[in-house]
Image 1 (cartoon, one colour):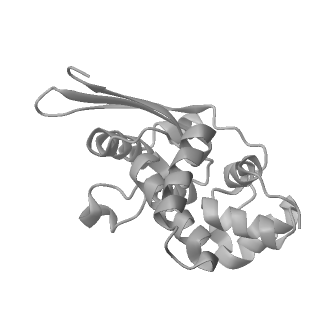
Image 2: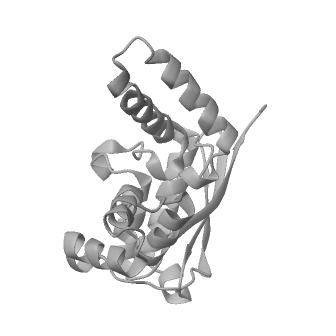
Image 3: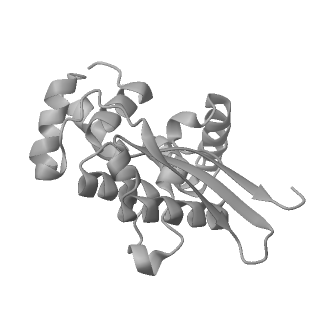
Length: 199
């Protein structure tokens, strides 16, 4: 079985807009064959998945959020493929929602791929030590579960939106896929900066 790298998963995700875990599973099931993985995703998720190929998200919007006490501010860049979508109310609203979320949730990275390997490995070592008293066959699974929880606390796309009632507990990544499906374009949260007075 070929090794599925995070880079391969991200490339498939960029092409299809499907979730990270879905992309990883599809690549694994397809033995690393990208075209077959896209086919598997389309079968599993129906018309919501399309092969966006090499379509580049080179248009977009920069949105801001300033907390009412003027002590926390956020700037976020969200990209899409056309200036038509970049001006679309739903797309702009999504970008604003992301900015407000970043202000409240304080993520450190946009994607799992951006997490430095040293930080990931350090956390994994801690989680493995915490699971040392558990049966050997489940230690790795426990550590992986704790790592996933750590991602959900610090990686933007893995975080459930802070307004859980409005967004039904969906993650920023799921909301991104939703707006991508609605607009029919590749939507990418490119980068953000979060400012806090005194930090």
